[in-house]
Amino acid sequence: MADHMLLLTRKLLRIAIYHISYIRGLFHEKYFSENSVLSPVMDNEKLMPVHDDMGRLIDWMEKGVCDALQKKYLKTLLFCICEKEEGPIIEEYTFSFRYPNTNGEEITMIVSRTGSEKGSTAFKPNASELTSVQMNYFLTLITISCLRVQSLY
Image 1 (tube, rainbow, N blue to C red):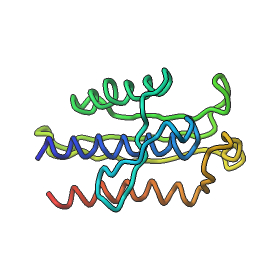
Image 2 (cartoon, one colour; image 1 turned 90 degrees about the vertical axis):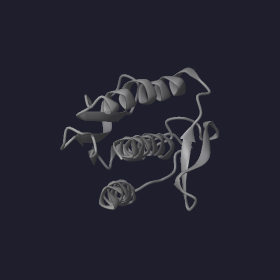
Image 3 (spheres, rainbow, N blue to C red; image 1 turned 45 degrees about the vertical axis):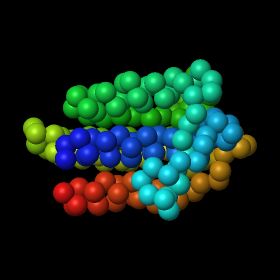
Image 4 (cartoon, one colour; image 1 turned 180 degrees about the horizontal axis):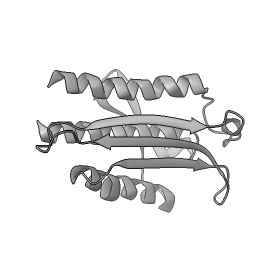
């Protein structure tokens, strides 16, 4: 069961990071492929490692974040979006993790978002328009999915 919870948490985290990347137009739409991860009715965008920046994000997730999650080192993950490469942060997503028991059968993931509405309109032209209400809904779905799976066990 501990392996199942870890696997599910990793999948939900991947979905969140890749969806944020897709919705905010961090990479061109053609570099994503549709993927049904959790259920056939919930399509998710999967990032394809086509160029260095995408490969770096995937490596960061797979070799860094997921490894730290498995070893229970990961407490907080910040995923920030800047207006320019060296510019100010316009959105910040915080993923907090708790490991309530030592046997690894439970992982709690809490997601929050901060950012200015003014800055959120200055994204790449290929980005989907997403209001803060829609983003909060998306983050709520991720949280509900986590709680739902925890309640199954």
